[in-house]
Amino acid sequence: MIEYEEKLKKFIHENNIQGEHLIFSQSCHTVEEAAKAVNANPNDCVKNICLIDSKGHIIIAIVMGEDRVSTKRVGKTLKIERPRIATPEEILEKTGYPCGGTPSFGYNAIFLIDSKVMEKDIVYTSGGSENSLLRITTKELQSSNNGQIVRIRR
Image (cartoon, rainbow, N blue to C red):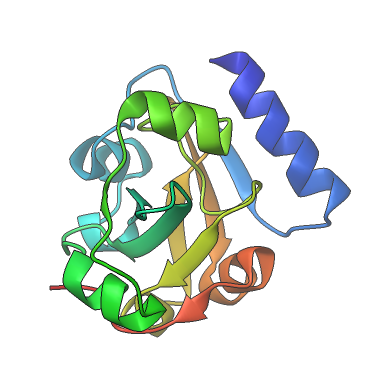
């Protein structure tokens, strides 16, 4: 897992992204685990839900920790058929990061950020592995992935 953390750190450095990369001995795979690791509320964390469209392209839907993504809204926003949840194998292949550690930027994808995420100043997002997180402002997060801000939560 260290290779994925290093890959993300390199991307952050090379692209001058302002954020704090945090590595833990315990898992941060779930929102509950992530919130516990940083002693925060689950809604201080965001989830990067990996979706696949009918042509095999990856879409990253970024929602608050306690929210769920609406694939119907994602489809409407992008004017495509409803996408499906990516498999762990597809996530690794298309993002270069493992499921449970997929960051909010650093690879080629369509990024959608739920409007509720932008109501926060700072959030925690996956840091490249199941044992790492990135503390980042929502403004920097959006700037780092050029994500479209739109309501995609259920």
